[in-house]
Length: 136
Image (cartoon, rainbow, N blue to C red; front, top):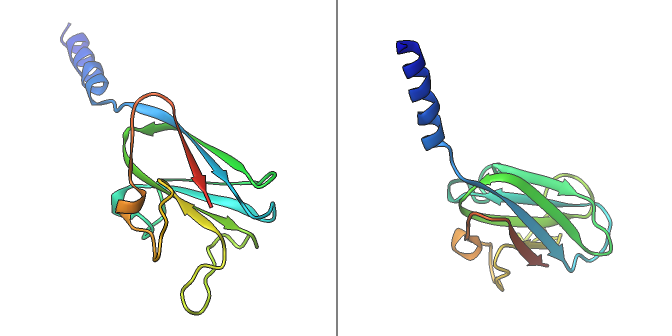
């Protein structure tokens, strides 16, 4: 009986700790051509553009558009950064002066005059399937 009670308490404890998750669909528009691939990262504040994102994908581009779906993402605050890896070298390329060579976009579609910041990109991912559109 004692073992059953302990197992029940452990099971209930994991149920309480379980985090709500949701699905996120990201649509990217205005990609200049279908060459290479689209790279997309879903970041948290702690790793925004400084470390590998906890969620990332690379997808083919078709007719200047691409769609990415992240399943079972814990609800919370995130930022998205995506770029057109036109030469398929798995990294964003820059000119000598630091300006990007490849098109990019971030969540919230701000007009930027410098590198994106967490404040530019952050959004709240809530329960229920969510869709975000990014325009290059």
